Amino acid sequence: MTRASGEQGKAAPSRPREVTLALVLFLVSAFPQALAIAHFYAVGFASLHLLLYLWFGARAARGRQGSRIGVTITAAVAWIFLAPVI
Image (cartoon, rainbow, N blue to C red; front, side, top):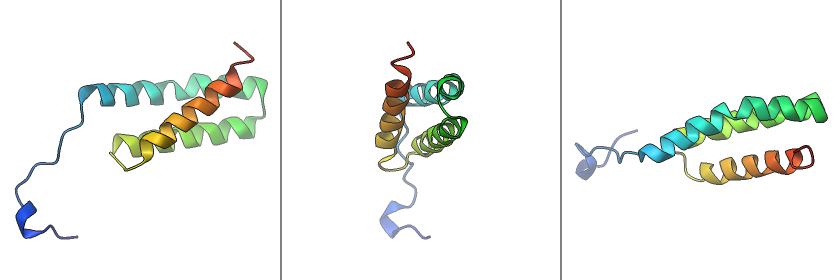
């Protein structure tokens, strides 16, 4: 993939530090949530949740378009399933 002639030498915009910290916390929280879901629901569902959680988190960390929506939906689904337990 080649850059357009006017784009050479431009630095990529940096992500705010808060976004990076939020993604680190998001990915770290995936494991306790998956363990809690596995304890009260099917293990297959917990594995799928963990896989989606890590996949969307990695996509958001790389700055993929629309990945923040996936992160938000995945986190909301986890809390919906864990709400009766808490």
